[in-house]
Image (tube, rainbow, N blue to C red; front, side, top):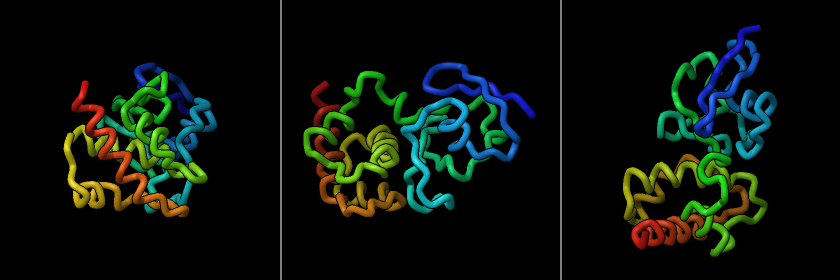
Length: 155
C-alpha cells in the first residue's frame, strides 16, 4: 500500500492508503481529523469541504493520490483556538442547528471572505449555493458571514 505525505493544517502527516482512497477518508480514518463530514459522496452537498491550496474542494471525490504537495486545511486547521471570525460569528448567532454541515459551510465561507472581504447577500448566496443545510439555517449562515466580514474589517 502506498504511503502519502500530506501537508495538512501546516503539518506534514503520513498515511498509508490505496491510491483511490478519497481524501475525506484519509483525513477522518487515517489522520483522525473528523471535523470534515461525509454527506452525499458526490460533491453535491458541501459537508466535506476543505481547502486545497486555498480553494474550497470537495474531499469526498478527491483521491489522495491526486493531492500531491498541495496544502490542505480542514476545519481543525482554520483556527486551533476556534477564534476565526467565522467560528466566532457562527457561535454568536447560534447558526448551527444539528451542526452536521457546518464545517463545510464555514470552510466555503472562509474562501468567500478571502476572495471578497465585503460580500453582498447575492455574493454570499452564489458562493454558498453548493453547500446544503438540511435544517435550513441559510438565513443565519448569511448573517454570520456578514458578521465575520465586519469582524475582519475591525482587525
